[in-house]
Length: 127
Length: 307
Image (cartoon, rainbow over all chains, first blue to last red; front, side, top):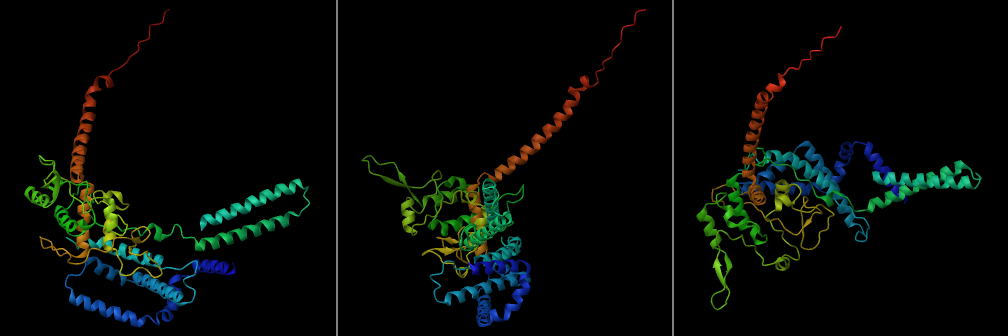
């Protein structure tokens, strides 16, 4: 009961505190463990580009959109959520939790932005 | 959340009203202020409980409705634009080589393809590759014959049970009218085909044998990603990327759903031209029809007063 009220107050606080500013504060601690992984992924992508000549146009546009400021911010939010959920998963008693968090909303926000950014430009690149 | 707070407010209001009537009957023996504080406390407790409930409630979520597909620049989008028929032809190839393994196209006959995407002889050859039931011979034994233009495109399974048995209980929908049958139409089909992420978002648990697709309401879809780069080889040399194949097959399925589309727009244009010129003509004719009436003049000559 008390925890829900605390959550409620937290939510009200979130309404007024700018989210991006908050995210910047937590960048370092959230990314501590992920830095290595990110670098690996980047390397993989570079290799793929060299191997395949014809790359999917939609994927290319989506990657471009991911590199914009808004795309980066949304990706950061999603990564933060992933880290949070992974932490929850490692804690004991996760299986028995009544309410398990997922990152669908963060994923939707990111995907929706990438769609609205990539979709209008896609069909001019297709035959 | 909003509706819940309204609800709790309503609850607190009704309790106040009920209690105040009771006080009226019991000769105002209880302090009014005490009752109001009680009602307010009840209201706050109720909204707290409802909020706690809303945290675990799993309804009306974004995941349940699916991600809304963006709008794409389809060739047929303009009021006078038609389908891209080269794309329909490529789309049929994608359907035949990829989708037809699971999805039927029951309501489309071979003959409808003639002059749309293929020539008469090409469609005849395509139909002849399939066997259809023929009339029994003189001894009553069932016979088979090669397909002809009037036949409908055969599906991969003889019936629904066979289709479900082959797909872990999931029924691949018939694609004849799928573009009309889904909210978002072509945009949705295209997004669905190209929108399989590499991994499901963290924390999402999928049923066994299902895949994650954000555009599919609920997120868990039995169909896996089927389109990959260079899966088919187009006869016109178009690079077969995932999005190119998705665009072509969606264009083909849109034609299946609306085979009258191009003709409808042509007829509509004709109708607008003819009807508007007839209308203008009638306005012009009306001038002459009414000329006599409009130029009529009524005069009144009063009788001369008697002296």
